[in-house]
Image 1: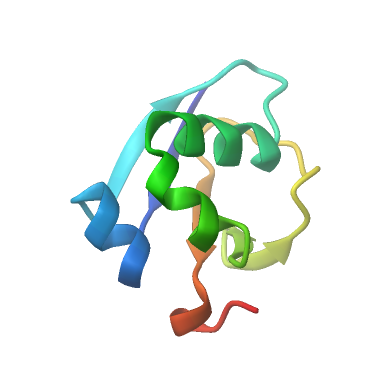
Image 2: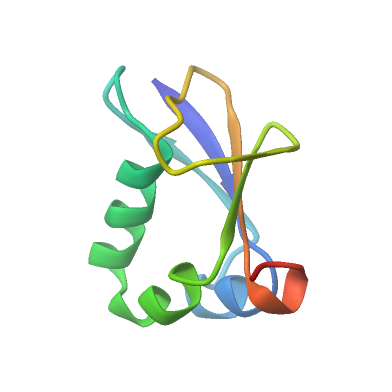
Length: 82
């Protein structure tokens, strides 16, 4: 499946783009995307550890399952995260 990931504030600065599409396994969860992004760029970890997850404009837990076409946003502390 493909999902859209949007980046804001310090996450956007590190990643170097505002959004991207990721191809994931059908049973992927928010936690899987967090892990994927942190493995791809370890500089994200301290920010991701304090960021909230928003899926299709709703706050969700890391265990939430993803579906085709979902929009996932990680909200860093400067953008309202904890």
